[in-house]
Length: 255
Image (tube, rainbow, N blue to C red; front, side, top):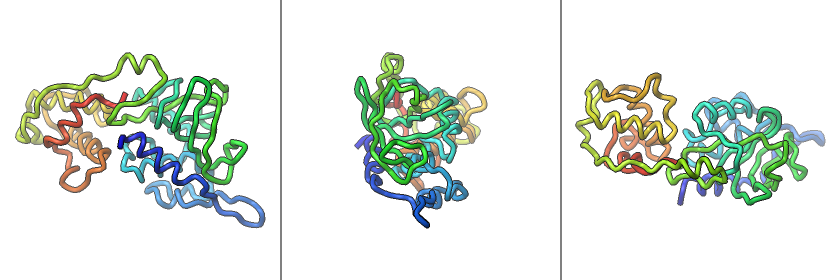
């Protein structure tokens, strides 16, 4: 099962969940804020972005989506990684309203006219301040739709954007050089290849400068983030590339 389908399955499983209710009013109390490290403070507040963060965390793909309670912050997170489009994609995070700061959800399908989404903190009418998790159908070309953040799925992304389709990463065929090439402070040509592939997979944020031949802590942290995005942990996510990590990095990035 691909990354996108994992996200969609987890999100859809929450459909029908409702926030707390007191004295005849919905309260914004929900299970998602306390479950996402760093977002506990957002309990009893608008939680559509928190829901998306929770889904990504449950899927083991937290590094592919912003961890935030703010829609506006989510927009900037994707834009800063050059993973933003005006076109829908399966598994993309859609943002609504002025500057994308009003509401958000996860796209599970699209066609020429509509997007089909799973959204937290909405209702039957599609409000940005609702009561639960719902499946929604919205017009693609509505002025309410601001744009889409594209997660760097390992399998690539099913996008309606012709620019993304034509610029799809084709991967790299460089063979694994052996673990000895990746020792902190050591230089090896494969380290540059490693860094370029990590950037292609959406992990350029770890580099203050472009990837180079010396294996640094930036390379190790970026590699660890990539490994954790695969659902690995422990020694499989120590930041040092092994054959499995290398094979997945050389595969076409999620574009």
